[in-house]
Length: 431
Picture 1: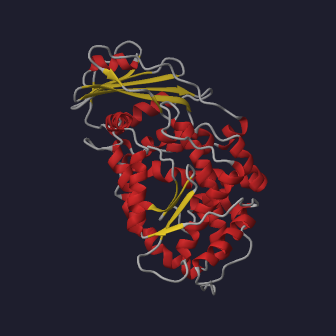
Picture 2: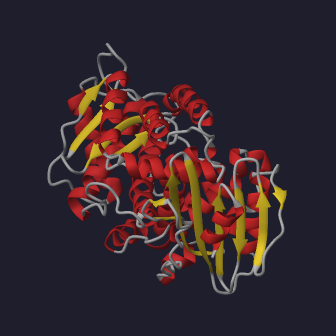
Picture 3: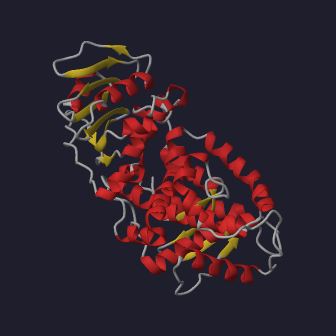
């Protein structure tokens, strides 16, 4: 589900910041210096001159220097969408993504019949306003078809975001994966992406406050609102997977900035976060708390074919708790607080023709007590029509559903959930 492109979103990448981030980002945004004022500046109308001015501003704000300033490619939004879809497809592995789709459907995060490849490709094609490709150094920004003259405030802001990627790549080297992410390392890759996009989003916010007039920011809100409406039509889990690197990454970057300015952010490139728990919970990055690898998921035997196990991070656990069965109206209380009990996680899907089975293994963090109860409450909320079944010895839950059955076991700090077409398969996976 991860792409090698580093993107700016039309909604999540636009001017403005959510109230939930103000505490983390107040001092970081104060570092923008100055004000752009209410009305648009008398900007140069030559995009080349604008590029030079924006690049200089990015260097000054970020306290780093370009070895060379990339020459952006400006394309229509339609062409940008086509390019993003094409590049996204290149980074996909059909077998892995089919297994991911099976797992997310069984977990209630996607509707039956969903294809995570198609959802992600469509969403990114609709949302991305520009991108930087670290493999080639190419920087692409969308512009309205037939528009002449200088870049408007939205395009300048996106350009600042992508120039930050190019600048940090040249000066610090981006900690990105080349090619596809290895199975089992997805959570670490998402954490690194949150650092990179959080950095660029913070720089973009600073640039916007100092160089894009309020009227231009307000004019750009129409596109941001339309993009939010498009996001809202996606399953909650997909929405959060797209926005996490920007919003939660921004909060992470702001905390680093508050502790030590851009030097602290630079240091994180040499020591990037290894879990999304480190991104979400500040003390874990500071202490270097690593993930604990859960015990392998047992095979259900028979004719079941296993897909490679994938990581299930604290962020993904929180997204499930925010929308059991894909419905935010069923959210558990305090999803982020409950997900803080995470110390490690894995998920593995199995296929037997059209039948699906899924095993989930979580490790409860030392000192926590409620991860087992949280998983039970989440599954009950996600599948309210499932009927209780007779629980076996050591089982915290056994349910018989119309489509799938589930068994939960919680020995010690292990939380083991098995999901299958029958209770015997679910029990084998929860063992």
